Image (cartoon, rainbow, N blue to C red; front, side):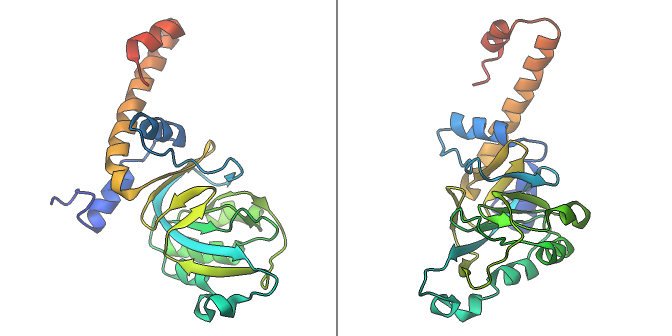
Length: 232
């Protein structure tokens, strides 16, 4: 294995993420579609709220709205601050994915979490729940992709089921280490096992699209350009 092999460890992982630099969620979807892979696009309710486009490795937290007769001890008292544990151990460039089953009735993210995550070097949070303190996020330096905002935090209402395990967020399976690409178009997840091939395909398609758009700017018709470049 070479140092840039995606399976070779930390250097390979960094090289893999770097292959997605400058690629938008849309072109990554196109590449996955062309390869016959599940599209990995999160529900449109999970949208850009703050910050720049990001690409990075996923760290996961699985949370849930508690049943009327259920509280955190039933699911593991050691997980009561599971989200905080993941934040405290976050590595530079990682993206925190907090699955909440689409429940946006109370915030699962706020300024204190964001401040610590930024200090650890995390790039963003992605959640199918809600967040708060959204106006503070640009200054803190954390990108936010979420269903919406809420000033309410329901400490007894939301429980943590697991950390650093596969989760379903925004209708998409996300495993720790998967590649998350998020921008103003939305959020897409690329399984780590296929990520190198997806990045190669997406980059080639991106370069072809740039040539196609240059031809259109020079006067080519859209039908002519599509026939010539056959980018799909």
